[in-house]
Image (cartoon, rainbow, N blue to C red):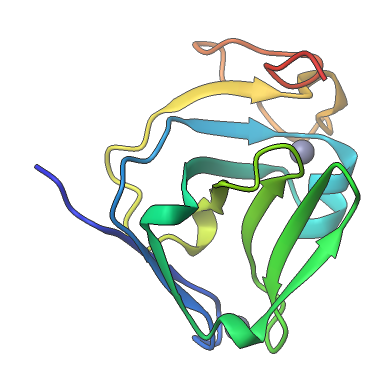
Length: 134
Ligand SMILES: [Zn+2]
Ligand SMILES: [Zn+2]
């Protein structure tokens, strides 16, 4: 079964469709993710080449150099995260995905930086950085 993954921001100015496979979900507790989105991030990568984005003119990017966060200029929803060394891959911020059924959690990045109100899942690997060793 191949179905498109769709998503949109809170106000609807930015929406997208991804037709390619979606990688397993990663949680990230790093400080940039926390401050950018207001909490830890749950995201899953897909190939930008399989995506169509509606309202891309409303998309803004906060660039940290090593990565950037894509968000809606109108409502502020965070939709994407892109690593500087892999601009061909977009991580979808899963809070904006319409249906996350079947997306399984694969690991927790920056687990040591998790705020203590978060309960980390015990059944997936925890990394003190990300799984690329950063
Ligand atoms: Zn919006
Ligand atoms: Zn992060």
